[in-house]
Length: 248
Image: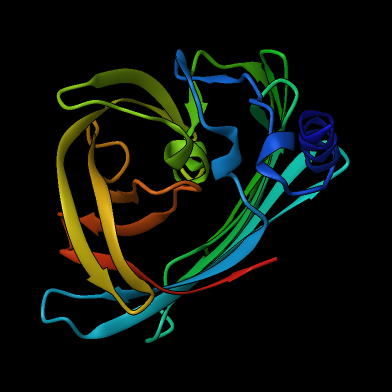
């Protein structure tokens, strides 16, 4: 009798939403590797930007939600001196596991960019508008040979498990310049860091490029669900660190 009761308890809990028994693996592939789909969460994260003197110079708010089979990520980045203000939205198809829509609006002291792109199979279409003294709009309707959008790295890198010494090469489309960067990521080391959100045991990943997009060193928490905790941009010596998170 006690075995029957135990079996009934196991069956009951396997149907309770959120129970680990109900979390069956979702098989997806990105950059040729199987990924941890459950590291994509509905949450809102706040990051602060610090210069080489550890002075706060800007901030970024990143949030993501699931809607009708899509993961929609939105972020707003700005420097405190008003030199750059950017908003962006990226739509990830969770069936094919690719970004198929993106919108970027950027304002700097020199120019304004308005980018609206859609990817269907291999065809990239949309508009690219740039304003200096006047506005010029380019219609995009062509096939690009690239592996991923630059934005995908920051949306999905935390889903990927790498081992020490692993290296992955890819072609990244940089929407703000409509250029394709030959890039690579490799697992550099494991490190524990302390942030305003807590202490994290992290994988440290180095993003290297051919100069067509910024290089980054990225700290990703090892605990599931994984999160991007910190970025470092070597050129301007800019650190971007997680300071708060609000899970849905």
